[in-house]
Length: 297
Image 1: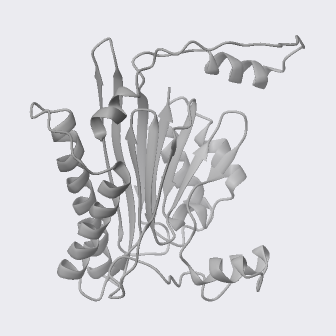
Image 2: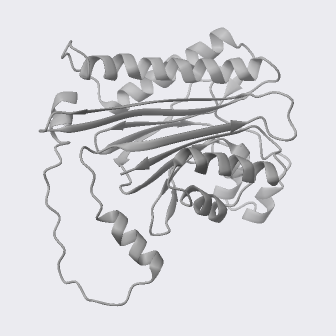
Image 3: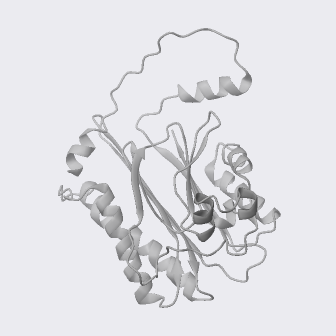
């Protein structure tokens, strides 16, 4: 039940540090430690987004959606957010209609099932789990794409933040990363692409994958007639840290090392997102670029 889930999000834990050994810290280490101990209450996050058509496309087939809110009453803190990136396929109009309709359908479903029920005056928490709500929303997005953009398709990668948990829904090859201030960058999604399948089977190398002629071929995407189940998982929120959602226009052009450097290089997520898009365009901008960056504090 969502009600019982919400009760678990009471942030009254006391953190203890034991067996600490003193040692000189570098400036970077000192910065990390300072941020980790700079507790903010109620729990919240900062969000930025940016988008570009790129340098080699004449129209945009990406869509993004984000919404966030916080409820705090002195007893429990409930941060809430929905963040979606969709990368359309199928040529002019079909791709952009597919991505737009998918992002809208999923966002509307989650807001209707969770935000207006849990944060509104109805006090009627849904009986479904967060993962079930995410899966139902992606099914609604699939239906919307087939109806509004026949012959088109789209990726769909989404994060639903509820309290201290993140529920991830994913179809296609847009990506979601967790970024930590200690230098870790963890890919939380798996590309539903032919190239990734060949990599998983050890039939090609990472270097061969970068220039593979079929690197844009997906075996799973919204708009396909064949039934499929999206990848869905729920994990603890990276805190402190970042959630990065992006289309392949970013991760396909900019290395993970550079993405990490830029994403963590500004205190303001919107500026970091703009810098990420600029880096992708400087690398040639072969595709549309969309990015959402959520900074948890």
